[in-house]
Picture 1 (tube, rainbow, N blue to C red):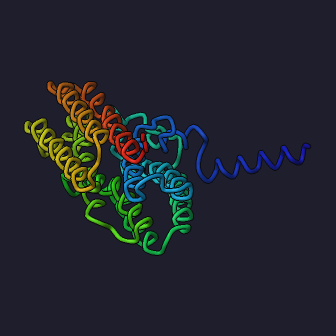
Picture 2 (cartoon, rainbow, N blue to C red):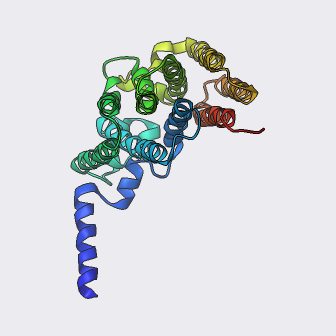
Picture 3 (spheres, rainbow, N blue to C red):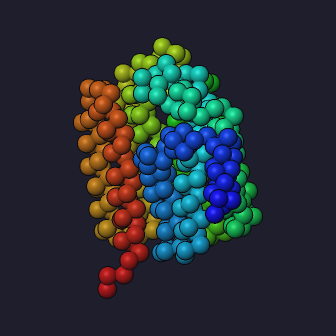
Length: 303
């Protein structure tokens, strides 16, 4: 029994030395903050159901769902690593684990490599075409955190990264990527730019001081108007998709609920208050979930 306990202690020590303490891992992967997972998962499930025209099967459901959790965690790790020298200068991020020393830079890199290895292992159960597309997804997720140093459009790269799983889902299930897949991709990309601009409004004053770029900084006093235009674009793309696929009233009811969510967000950000902007950002996962429910009901037989 003593030998077993000693082996467990050694295993824990090895894990801690390589990847950090549980608290450090939890914080850097945002295990305690699932909002990012929701924002990534709901659109991926849209694509799976639309591509399969119903439940895609347990294999695809598990691979893509677990892949979302793993890649979201990997994205958080590489984001914190990229921002390790600036997070301490921003009020919202000054308590990040790398800033506080809960995890070292080397441990963060080790953890990132572990997570993307798990994701790649999952993808190996899919077709070679999907595997090839997954490499594009990895590049998008890996380069996004560094874009804010070179362009005011890091949110566009994030949108592409958050939407790429949808393209992979169609390729895996259909064997090709139809127009409907690109409509979903475009809708989610624009939606992501809109809500991440709202998110960036929270940090805008700090970002300007330290020279970090974002759409919130670029849009300036036109931010609310441009966000509203992007939200209208999202609704138009979703309606276009529904018309092409001849979706039923449940889908359009979800679009209406999403529109109401956008109106609520515009109300929240009207004075650009930091706390209200953050609340508006969080509200987006409800709209994404409304659309998922509408799609699920679209393929449910009620008669």
